Length: 260
Length: 373
Ligand code: SF4
Ligand code: SF4
Ligand code: SF4
Image (cartoon, rainbow over all chains, first blue to last red; front, side, top):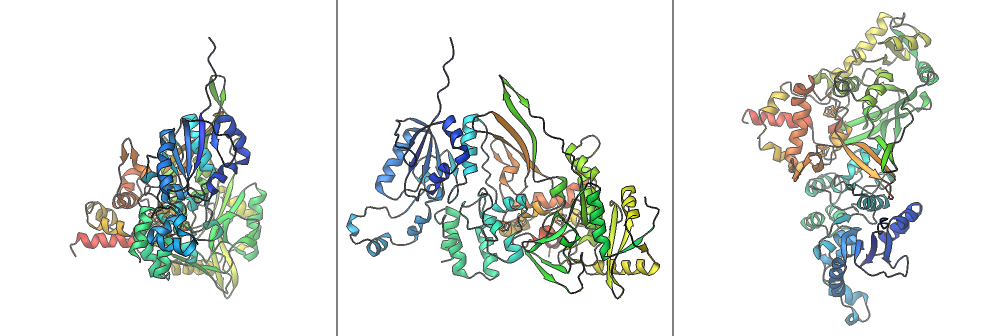
């Protein structure tokens, strides 16, 4: 008997509290998009198609953080329907820029911003997906890097190890031959405590790394923060460096709190 | 070798040298300024060389400034080393494509480019000799490295100024290149104008020297060159303790490792810029459809947790263990493994450490701890 053609893995893309930029990275894979569509069945991806294929799904990409009671309940349904759950972007992996609220009183924001605060139903904190359900892989970044996304999807389809190093951004600079902006120009840079993978965007433009890929493995934020403070960066500025896209990531949160 | 003895060429001679090497089919790579540093990149002509540029080095600090004398090689070493060319950061090992039920390896065009390196410092020449022992040992040979190294043309430059983090004198590796070059230049800037003393160190170098103009060197020229190199020797920014290997091995359990770890970012910059660090990892990649697979080798660092990952976890989880691994290998156990130190005193790891951790200082502190003070 002829073997049936293997079924294409089903892919779903879910959105929680986020700006959609990471989903756009997937659509931005112009050259590779056909190959993706060829390799997987895109069963659920509202940003791209109206199709709402039913679960279960082989791979779920989850964008966004949990900020409402509804989110907190929906993520469990997504998890139940997904064999593999991959979080994409700083919102999903660390709570995103909206986790800045975690440091303040959210009711204050609500009454300052909305004419009818009573319509707003929100949680006190913006939290990462892994605070709620088990996560199989994380793709960092604000937004994610499309090459990493393609690599991970390719690794799952071809049963190989994905290339998601957890070492420093500095390694990426040095592999590319980018001159260190911190040592050669005195520009504050989070690269030494940030996970590599962005494609070395900021240092190649002579900007310091903003840490959008979040803390690397074993991040020594205290040493870097102290060095910056001793070399001309004000205390408040050091605090703010750690309090941006990944403000809610444990290592960065602790460091910014220690510098209140 | 050349029939000519030591020769003196003028400032224009450098342009001729670059042109001759290019004519001979070399990709000529040399120092030039980019993004606030002296980097080693292909030269279009000798005009790209960093005339009048001087580099100030300290722990975690590097700045360029201008000097009026126009010296071309007054800078010392840049953030890159020549391993970038001899042992590139990412090397494709092989690629294969699906073929029926199996696969076939894709034939790649032969890698046969030849590089000429201009401005290789004595410490970096010694670093190449260190890598020769690692990659080209007779019984174990890295074919790509050995081929590129054999075909490379090395123009050494003896140092006439030391950088703030240099310590080649205490490592016995500089500031003059004794051997290991095709040509060696010493820059002479003074009342007699701007000239270079040139010496051939190989038959290939002699052949090039024969085609360069210039005049025979006089005893005065040689004395001037010696004095210039002497200035570099007298102005070393750093010094490595002579008993470093013993100090390290006697202090493997020192509490000082935790002290370093409090500062160390485990970022790996030191190993990336070091001209002798050679660790790599292997990565596999595929296209989405699984038709083409590639295996590549990329520089890795003993400061990365993954580097010591074996089944179940990383062996060196603490940064203290990673720093200790690096410095003891570099300065002590390298001797047992390769019969030489793994450090050539170039100072790059000090300058390019984002928090200025100083290998010579750490050894001194450990040595002090050893004596109980
Ligand atoms: S520019 Fe930033 S990321 Fe790059 S090596 Fe320097 S400190 Fe590291
Ligand atoms: S250990 Fe540091 S000083 Fe020694 S060769 Fe390496 S980079 Fe240069
Ligand atoms: S010694 Fe410096 S350059 Fe090396 S890993 Fe530690 S912080 Fe990074």
